Length: 188
Ligand SMILES: [Zn+2]
Image 1: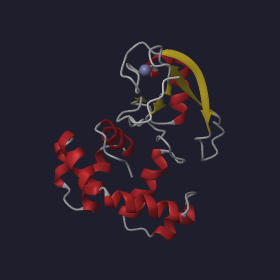
Image 2: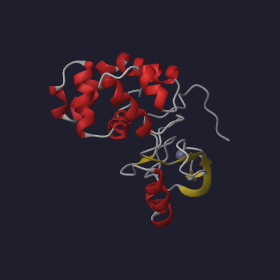
Image 3: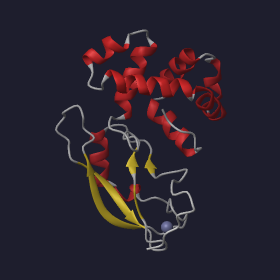
Image 4: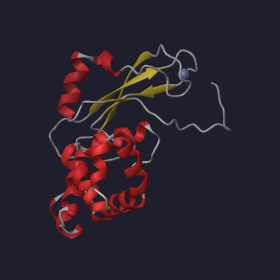
């Protein structure tokens, strides 16, 4: 196996299939159009020609809809031999909850609901919600700049709260996060 300890392993872009907004849609699409998940190029070495390499599963259904385990297609690069996987847009990389859950809670806090009242009704803990909110605030200038470069209409919301209220009224959080991921800006 090739090993390059001096190079950053994290790539700016990881394969994500856009336009898949629910786990049910993902399961259907995977059955009918599995080829859509095939990345154009290897996220490690950048070359084309990846092979399908089975699946791994995630327990992404945290709302008990009975959809687990969720299969995630894997691919192998014939050039650098590394494997990668391709996520549907609705599943955030390296997160426990779906973007839709994170979006719902953020929307409620933007509307003025307290962390306590929101966490009283929804599964993520208060600490988790606080972390999401803090990171969203900390990275706001970078998020705003990156998103306004792509969505000029977003610039009408100036402050943190008005920006995100405006943004989420026009686009789902997963769409904004996908865009940020593609330009290498860290997500909340
Ligand atoms: Zn490769």
